[in-house]
Length: 460
Image 1: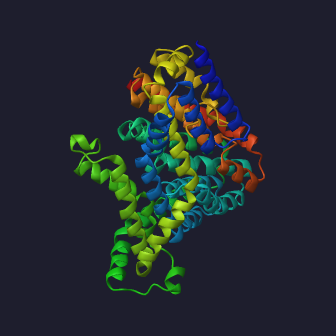
Image 2: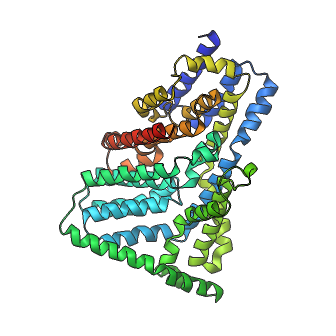
Image 3: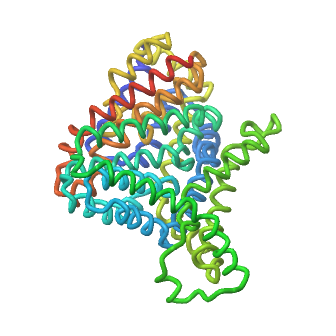
């Protein structure tokens, strides 16, 4: 390895150490790492400024737009009271049966997070879900784990949460393992509940009643939808009295409508590259967020739709401002690592430490999956973005396979990482140390990671 390679690798190690020590946040470390790569590769100042700083900042523009519209939709779901109503409805249906409560809180949390994300959403949902679970005999540790697994399941189905992967690997590659990821997240959460939550008494009858209640709610959706549309076209009142009324089942389906819209758009237009005459998945997702936000507004506050949508845009952007800057830094890092002048410096460094075969790389991801914790090298919101871009630049491995590997280790990072802001809040709210939460969930999150890696192995 050359002196330049050693300097470059040393810069990565220093940046990673500072992020792990929480001295330097990732949103500042990533642009600095991009500048360090440019300097090590000998990029002229104007090349760095024009091609890395400027073009890199714009590289993930599609992903940034996706996050902005997703945040707007999340605010609409929150401001209309839909997310709150879903959680409370689930609690009413489950009664005081621990395992029924656990499954319904998991489902309700996942349902809400198909349309929401961010610490604000975690605080809102967690402050409702956690007391409900602990009041029925579920331990604070298990309640925290179930909430985290529910958030993970919902985000796996939330198109907006794939922004980083779309920006690096492309929209088609990022959604290649979309449905397997949802299935694996659901399987891991179900396994945790069955293993750790007591069933309670009379479970058989209660589950039948629960199924009947859910079916009744589904059947009533068309009727409540007609009633809601009738109030919209009749110019119904929209004052305080209406806000206190129970939301209709038609309004409560709003969080999953973006997925329905994307599915319908895929059947009509086909999802893929616009060059092939298909609809870009990011464009489909943005349209889905807009249409679903409009639907949620009309179903709950038809007279306030314009003000609600405008306010949701402003407040949503405020909620994701840090994420947007992080995406700018990731774009700079990806651009720097992919630059033609940087490749001759980077490639020898990685070829000396990474295997050449897909099987060997899968083994490394399976064995070192916890390296996604504590802002480690597999963390896609830190060094992982740069490593992903470098591996992609090699051209040795298919983009879909690489994306699947990094999605796999994200199961470990998203659920168990004590440095996540939502893990910290949940630990503080429940009185359980985040390290204890990590030890409890790690076997399940690691297992989900290995299942995803097996999926990658069998499909490539």
